[in-house]
Image (cartoon, rainbow, N blue to C red; front, side, top):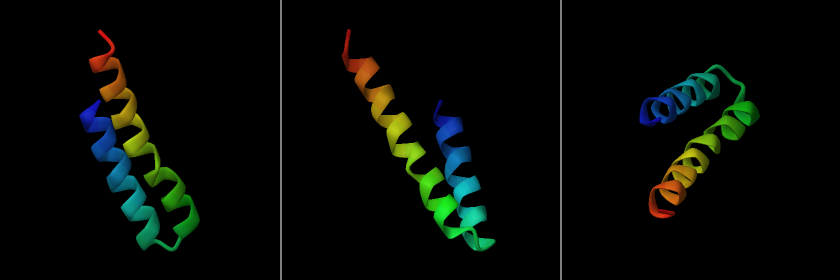
Amino acid sequence: MLLVVLSIIIVSEVMFLNGKKLEAIFIAFWAPTILGFMNYFKHRE
């Protein structure tokens, strides 16, 4: 899952540098959301 988060960040930065700023910001919000879900499910037990 951490590799997925890292790839999301990289894709977001590439899109931002290519001029798709709003789409990049939208995709960038996925990374902390996924990390938050991972943290929630880890501490739920």
